[in-house]
Image (cartoon, rainbow, N blue to C red; front, side, top):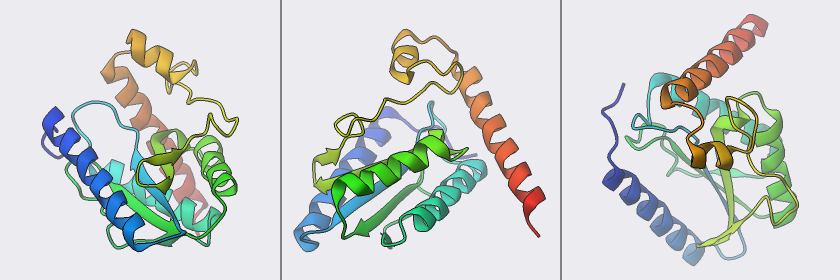
Length: 177
């Protein structure tokens, strides 16, 4: 497992993503940008399991949003966690609906954060599009409520993530021919 990530490193990573979006929209007029990261709490943001979860998300986007073009800046080995980028020339509402559907219906979707940008700092929000907020991994209440109240220990949340991923990959490998 990678070394723990500091708050400074996470803030720097957020700044680099913002800078990347700025450059993208300077060069790619009319396109949308899908920014894909993982929802992993705590100081460990990258591991072999997290990279496998990330790669499954890449496959899900390619399958469900076939017009999306995976960009070379995608990197699953970043210390601050895997980051993926797709460019797409499409209608924002339809694309956001597809991404929300992936996050809500795929067994690993709760671990994915698929943000759609129509401008460097203009994410298309699921709530703006009539979608609901995320659910807690542990108890299925609204995630923001559990996060704010610290209803569950970090250990419990990370164990839930590990079990979810292990079950998914065990099931998908048993179906492989």
